[in-house]
Length: 99
Image (cartoon, rainbow, N blue to C red; front, side, top):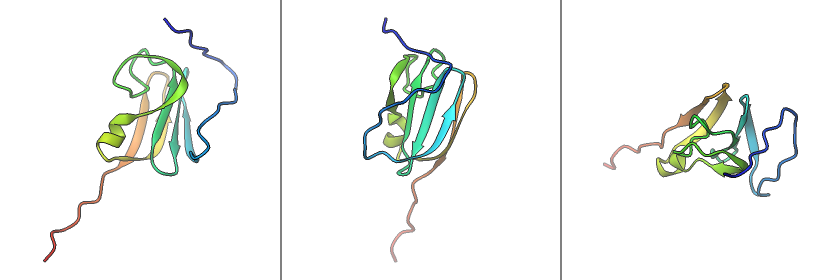
């Protein structure tokens, strides 16, 4: 099993340079960020699936939540609880049929 460094104090984290973080949520052992483009990245302790990666894996590295991308959803807000993550998303705009 991979060692996961769960820290009770702030730590610097490298994100890809093209990501601009607009919102941050912190749980008791995990973190989530929303980017300006509406992507959700999570990392930390994932035992209860709170990272949203369709598994219970923990990770020290931020991973994009691919479910939102696959569904065409854009994250707007994120709030983390002790073992949960709540995300407010925008659905894709449906265009009326052309007349």
